[in-house]
Amino acid sequence: MPGLLIYNSLTRKKELFTPINPSEVKMYTCGPTVYHFTSIGNFRTYTSADILLRVLEYNGFKVKYIMNLTDVGHLTGDNLGDADTGEDRLEKAAKEERKTAWDIASIYTESFLTDFKKLNLTKPFEFVKATDHIQEQIDLIKKLEEKNLIYKTSDGIYFDTVKFEKNTGKKYGELSTLDQIKEGARVEPNPEKKNPRDFALWKFSPKNVKRDMEWESPWGIGFPGWHIECSAMSMKYLGETIDIHTGGEDLRSTHHPNEIAQSEGATGKQFVNYWMHGSFLKVDGKRMGKSLGNAYTIKDIDDKGFSPLDLRYFYLGGKYNEQLNFTWEGLNSAKIALEKIKNQLEIIKSNKDRNVISNEKLEKLDKYRNDFISSLNDDLNTPKALATLWEVIKSNIPSQDKYDLILDFDEVLGLDLSKQAETKEIPENIEKLIDERNKLRNEKRFEESDNIRDKIIKLGFEVKDPAKNE
Ligand code: AMP
Ligand code: ZN
Image (cartoon, rainbow, N blue to C red; front, top):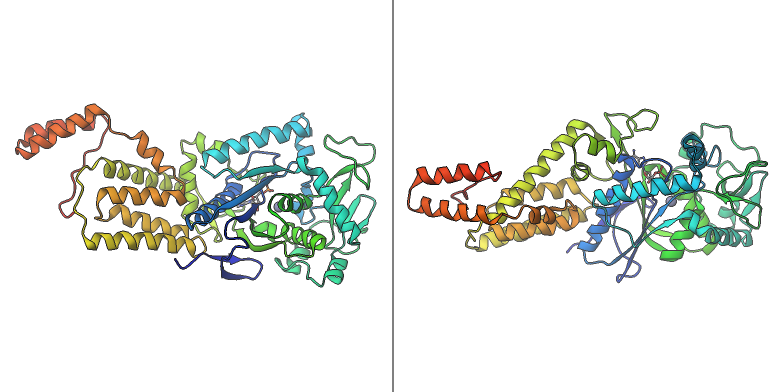
């Protein structure tokens, strides 16, 4: 096999994936901030991570996969280009919903995990919460303090990006362009920051305000900044240098450069070898947003009579790092296509005629398998892989081989086709009718066989006779 090529945002090149330790690949994905229902945009990013995980496994790698759940410290200013200003999203939602921030975290974590399962996303080795790792985050900030990379302002402890460059000889912000970071800021710069690109590691609780979530620290009562959780938890579960870190394209500008600076500032080692960023999902050609009313959720998908797996099929129709536009018509086409696949699979399964295997058919089998994995190994080209799936369905390879190959592909596609095949088991009474019909047809008693055919159709099953050239 030629190996897996992935586009690395750090080097801005497609590279052959070479793991640090081939016996266990270490992979981390930035998970959701659990303050509202996770949108289908967020889920596009997690589905891409899931495909990566499955492709790695298909290539024979064992993967240790960690995803975090941000339940503290992600401030509203992030939308305006300065993640260190504004309100904590969970505390804000708590006020709006008249609950505690802990309740908000628990409610939306629960709903996220339910939706995650519905999309058939592979459960990571562990989901890790920021609030369960306060000590680890404090310990990491202490390490940075020992290295003289932090300073105190009236509202928190900040990371000094200029000192980082001086002390380590590394460049800050390699993943993004510095212009992007500057241009992104639409709020007044904090005058106490030594450099505009410095960021909060620990924020103090505001004076005279009792937050729901706050902790003692060597610097004062408060809560961790948004970025430090990913560095602390990635290192705890996966080690100081990991293979792959994924997330949405927005994280490429600040969150991920900050993760790199903190981690490498503390350890002096490379934090991540391959960075992968997924493109955003648009809706009706526009940006998705809660305030625009188009940040659809899995519940919206369910309510409109679609299955979350229709959405999964829809996602696979676009390459993860190319823009994808969601429309209800597009989702409907995905639903129809998936339905067709399921029906075909049912027919293939029930087709008892084991065709004679020829060399030509065996070669085709190999070619399809090869095309499928080559597309996925080319930076996760799922649209091309789906095209191969359709070629297989339409091909004349023997039913049993076709069936096995489709289910093998589904190990990566995750459309839950094996379950479909199980649930569509042909009941005994239908089997009897099929046998009876075949007998009549062999005896050329077509009128009677057609009657049975109608009976079978009335009972909700499709009757397809194998094409002559199969
Ligand atoms: P958040 O809950 O805002 O922390 O975002 C969680 C993940 O979803 C991050 O990796 C974001 O980059 C990603 N994300 C946010 N909006 C979209 C979108 N419209 N399309 C794809 N990914 C998104
Ligand atoms: Zn992160």
